[in-house]
Length: 283
Image 1 (tube, rainbow, N blue to C red):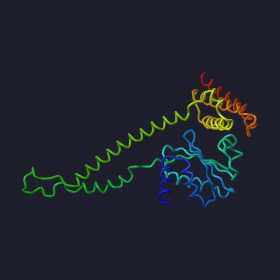
Image 2: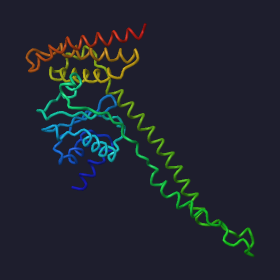
Image 3: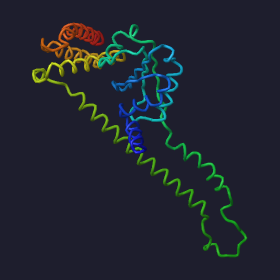
Image 4: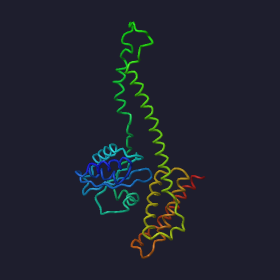
């Protein structure tokens, strides 16, 4: 059991969203709150649900989630948006729903920034005591009759130099490790954002087309809240266009065909608005 918990904690620290949610739900059971999450556009979107508003006190929920996440210290996650609403049936498209209509869907939402852990904190606590030792006289007996060439450096000075070297090497290797992880993350993001050519639409099932359309629409909606350059708006317009194309290709025998037909023109309008904003920035 302890090995399983350690594995979950390790996955959560590495930024695995399911592991993070499992830990949050375990620690918030007493509040009667259930959480779900999606990591998109460098933001961890959390949804907190309970049967009554009293269980979703904003101050309590935000404080507890901040403490849990900062104790986990998930890699590559610093920005978090906490959303809350009354418990509803399972919804696969909950992020899209609350993004498109937050006033009707949510009780409240709050953005937080997680503090970065100080990996040298423990070493900092040890440095004063080491410095105190270093204040002791280097040569215990200056009047010694032994020849100067036979005097040895004290052990505490050697330890201080060794500690400094170890700290320096740790900082160097840690810096390189962080750079390597950042490079891998960027490369992974590029792979995950590979565009699908129009010809590939025919090879996907209606369910896959619908799911891909929702994913692109959710990303475009989130990115539209922070976009401020022409290039960003062009990319958003392209995502809306791709989402509309996917919805338009859904087969009539698919169970969510009517929803797809309603959303295809909506996504087209969003694409036109994004393109218009990009054109305005080009003037």
